[in-house]
Image (spheres, rainbow, N blue to C red):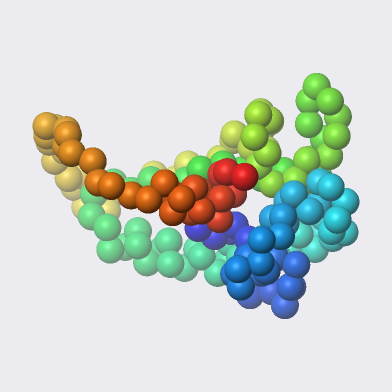
Length: 146
């Protein structure tokens, strides 16, 4: 999940409230509403530190996984850049916003020994009963739902 907040190795507190069940607005929402003031250099520093914490684990996985592995991201983040057509500063990955910062993501292809054979199988037709509230909570914690 990194480099998403919480910024694990930082001594910040503004990004860790939800880990204790705090229902406060997420970091990016607080920034856009002006409820939190953090300069962009600080955000980039702790964001990069979070990424640096995750990359050794990615490297280890790339050694262990056989065949072809792709390392990428599900989205980028806005860190105070202006959006279009309304030129307001954006933070995080707001819904309905399409900018290069959000949609252009890294794409690393790593080959480790011959590729695995991929065989089509019949799709699974059964579904598991998962509590709807649990799914909604998980999506909210990941920043994909409100």
